View 1 (tube, one colour):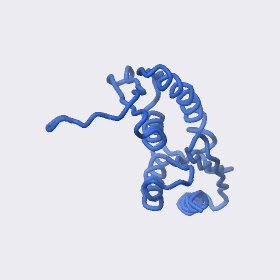
View 2: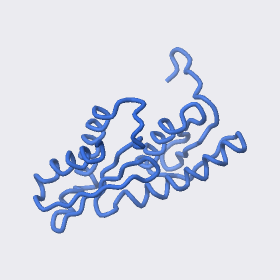
View 3: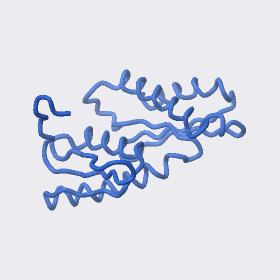
View 4: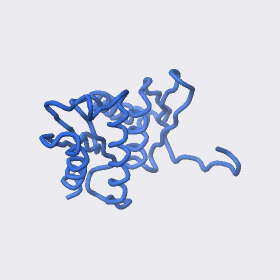
Length: 165
């Protein structure tokens, strides 16, 4: 089972920092959240400004896509690693908002602007929409810096013109 395989992968990586680490996981709106619970090494696992946690996340993504064939019907569209609910609360909020916003975008057949999320939450929402609502909706990030917003757009993403970035 993919969920167990991903848990074991994270456990193996983090056990180099803390042998007594506890790993659990849950699926929230097709996102697998793998939680790390460490009694003594939380700060070291997260690292300065979340750098260690981001590194574990990057490796998890590579492992996930290597073990998750396109079109898999296992109910998981993305996987994140979390420590002491550091990311979970943000992601759960974003996914709850996404569910209601998807209904609005589809029913009204118009763009819906989501509030400002950090770059990680935007990435999760982009991935979930791409995997779960392909052909019905797509996402666009617009704006710069702190003013960057996420838009849900009904329909199929238009092809980019040659030379367009």
